[in-house]
Amino acid sequence: MTSTLPETGQQFALSEEELRRFHRQGFIGPFTLYEPDEMREIWRRTRLELLDRSDAVYPTEDAVSGATNIANYDRHLDHDFLASHIGRREIVDRVASILGPDVICWRTEFFPKHPGDEGTDWHQADTFANASGKPQILWPEDSDFGGTITVWSAFTEATTENGCLQFIPGTHRTMFYDETKKMHYDPEKINSVDKDGIRRGFFGYDYRELQKDPDWTPDEDAAVAQIMEPGQFIIFWSTLMHASYPHLGRTNDMRMGFATRYVPSTVHVYPDSDHIEEYGGRISLEKYGSVLVSGDNHRPDNRMVTETTRGKTF
Image (cartoon, rainbow, N blue to C red):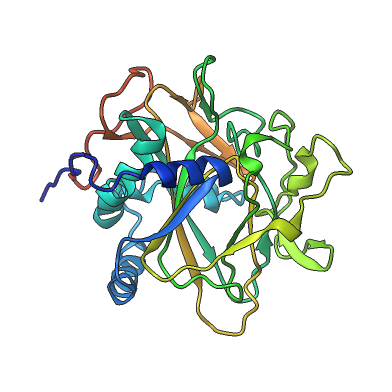
């Protein structure tokens, strides 16, 4: 069975006041896309279906060096619900009101947090070269912006006790990190980094290695927690300082977030690269493609997907 992504329109576009707030603070939301009970049922079913990786674009056997995070990218390319989710008008209309009418989704990622997991350390991403030192997205040279619009959807409840997001409003205009530096991957750092009395790491990396000023520290007193119900989503610039709390383990439930990343179709995705190199591993982009979710594609040299491996047409 095939289905098409919905045509974008203005039904869910951000209002002028919402746009001003977004550009001032770097984020907007949360918004409700699915009712909590609906999302719980969707995730219960989807979680089981995702165990079937026969059509996934990144096989796990290419991630034996610890790159399982890469293998978990872009499951929207082989799973019908995720393929539909990235193009929901409730999301795309709002993103297009920020980026303009021509928008691609270039990556999706799952962000699980299990009981006892550390918090994610403060970070920003502009070119997404932070792990390898090689840019994964490049905006045109005359662009006023950089980074990506991230839509983070709560597939489960997200609280301060199980690891919800934190933002420092207004920090998206200044990069405090130099992504041309290369972080050093060490799997032994996972769940073992103590930062000022709080367990904060970055999936086997130490994001502080990229700081422009080694003595600088984020103003955590200005941080705001993003508590979300299952089925809600929040929109933010990837250049916004963001982090997450640890999962304190007071419940046995996993917190699950699903991030969809959007840029204008003028942005060059994975420039001059045929692979992703992160988390101690390397995975081919042979089966990868960005998805046009709104308007027209202005980069014919980008890898694009028009149909998923399961026959779902975009």
